[in-house]
Image (cartoon, rainbow, N blue to C red; front, side, top):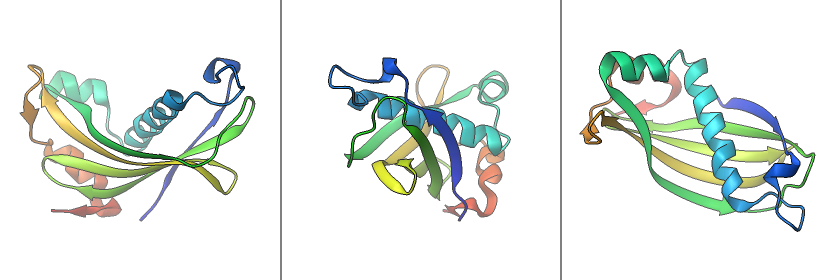
Length: 136
């Protein structure tokens, strides 16, 4: 199973008064990582919305804050599929400084229709994951 990597730098705006990354910003970091991962798989989220009428939404996040990141740290967001079904995508995500894991999360993504109702994952989305994850 391959792991997608997305590099980023911690800016002053990402930190709190103590100079460490504010906890909610890790969710922003992994969101960027997910978006870049989907882009790398060839999934254009704007086109998907325009053609299929569906959007991705986070349904669940299980997060562990393990170590603090600080201003000017070079971080890497990792994203790997754990499970892909016709209704959801479960991803393992992490934020690392070098080899040190600072934050880890298990994220469940679902599709919603334009009215906000649950929708099936378009076949082309499931197919884009191919051998990347178990499909049930």
